[in-house]
Length: 106
Image (cartoon, rainbow, N blue to C red):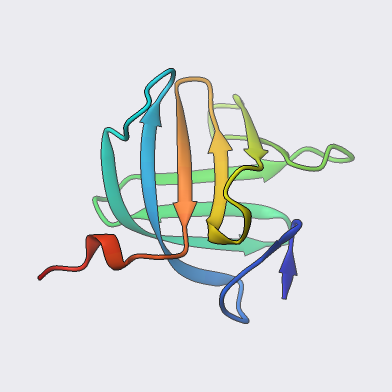
């Protein structure tokens, strides 16, 4: 399945992932969480294991541009290649990574 220019590691609209949260301007994440990314008709939701939920709806005719539930702009950015995708918001960036092994308990 090809999804918005990225190949997902599974053939579904829902995928388990890792979400690294980078506050604006930070070079290290403030948190890492297991999360679930889902897509339906261009709408994207990210549901973090700690209960935080993001809901992005697409801007018509503007690929890679979304609005969140506060009507703030969200941009899908390149930079992770086949490893995942980045969503840039006004106050943070969400790195959605397909490899969750970093969060695996020993």
